[in-house]
Amino acid sequence: MSETTASVTPAASSPVIGESATARGRRARIALRTLQVVLALFYVIASAVPKLIAHPSAAEGFETMGWGSAGMYTVGLLELAGGIALLIPVLQSVAAVALSGLMVGAFVVTLTYFNGENAATPLILIVPLALIAWARRDSNQRLLRLVTRRG
Image (cartoon, rainbow, N blue to C red; front, side):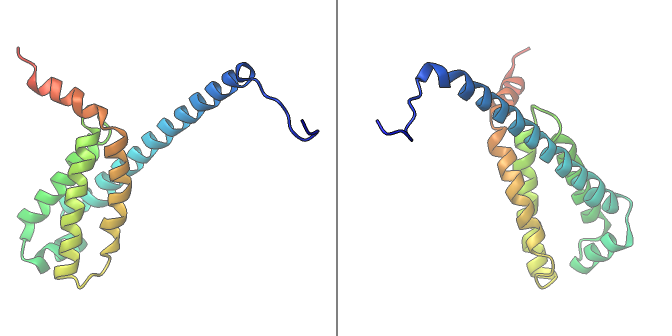
């Protein structure tokens, strides 16, 4: 054996690996929850509220599309519901999938009505939403049990 090679026994390395994996798992859960909170705040405050209060910037866009205030309030309510649902453990994966669908629609609308101006924004938002949907997919089983529970 050369002088630069060290022998490590599995018993000596197991507790360290277990502790670091646990710490990494905890940090990953905290990071994911933080991402969910940030996205929820974005959808509720920056996206839904302007539509629900009929802010001129939101109203102008929906008038340009010909959707009027009904379309604006509908999209605002969907974003509000999705943002809140991102914070509810049993709904978080479904909310991320639903908001991703809404972002696909937003992407198509920006290409169709606004010549692609800011079209990257919905696509960028789909990435963390997809991560949340995948990482929290176990909540789908709990939701299914709640929905199909016989009373």
